[in-house]
Image (cartoon, rainbow, N blue to C red):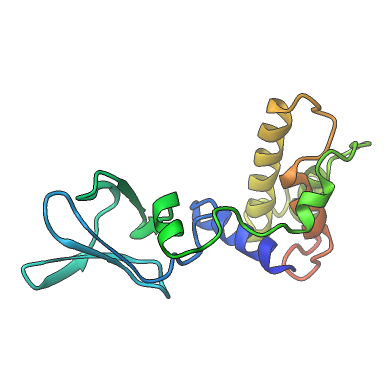
Length: 176
């Protein structure tokens, strides 16, 4: 499985979208006082006030400069300011999944095929982790296709499912 697909699946399983990547060591001042620090390894945000450091609670926080940061499940959701300060790209590097975008779909879409393979036609393996990930990918693909002017063409998520079909280790066939 490619690293980009692994990252996407981890994000799906954790419900964090693409925000599982560390934003590097970043600090900022909260508007109401306190120094925010983001750990580069865990992406965890902490706040230090009066010499006491605690985890920064989930939510949106306004910084002294007027910008905002968002914390979800204890981790910072990188925004443009954080990424720019750390000189990281605003967009992830291109990957294989992008190459499939726009390809016409004949028959079942890649995500539909993935769900059928790992969940079983009768959903026999519906409680398996791989099935849940595949179902989430299918939901994302359906949303993307519904918003597309070409609903019979592959989307980015379709490309991720196409890659996932090649990963027989994680996305094992459901055997009833």
